[in-house]
Image 1 (spheres, rainbow, N blue to C red):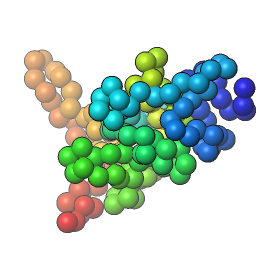
Image 2 (cartoon, helix red, strand yellow):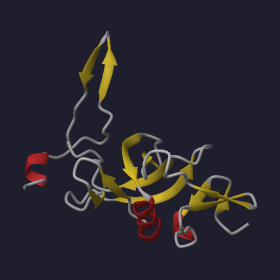
Image 3 (cartoon, one colour):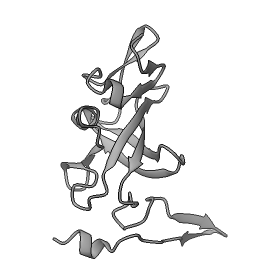
Length: 154
């Protein structure tokens, strides 16, 4: 087994160019991610590598996963804008990839990152998950770290 690889785990800084065509080493066999199950996209859960906090959920296709692994920065496919984007390309709040996992069905990924700039959400919040269900209603616990109107000028 290559240095830095364990079952369902890839340390990107050590092995970022090893993963091509979205294939992971698992023991002595290969795992190929299933992009076809959801029409070419897989969910990507982005988590702070130190705290474990879930920062965001986005979607990747094979191209953006490979870009993520090659550059060490997170890349996604925007379903609403129908385009590729790198996290932080406008805000400067980039994410350095620390580890990449796949689930048991090989149809989603968990990416542990070092979040720069504090905020992962386009609303300026640290996490996209700042709305909580409380007493049969959704309650916003918003604490923006920046003003999105100033950062994302059109």
